[in-house]
Length: 173
Image (cartoon, rainbow, N blue to C red):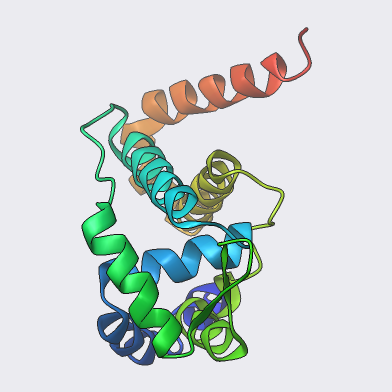
């Protein structure tokens, strides 16, 4: 039961140090290029903005003013990353990861790297993560003594019914 949790956090501190070295914008650029392939500067800024909006919407259920990185911060960072051999700028103006940066991305995201299919949109990724989290909670409830759950029977029933309705709606047209 705890192996997925243990594996997720196995090199947690090493990943945090790597992320701190990478700073915010740098890690976003690495993430975007890793997940979506080569992009130019505007496409990178668009993708970062979309990711941040989607993550915020998923977490909080509402829109907020997006955090689009500015050209004044993005292009100097791209130039710096090229100089550090983290990315290369192709003749078509798009940037892509080097072997060095691919290793950094793997070090940071570990086994999560690759779970996000390049053809899967971020919404699908968020749904998969939410369902995995729900599965963890259900496993926890399965291990709690039943007498502790009895006072919550109505809420458990309501949640069960709502999940059943979602499942049933998947087959409707």
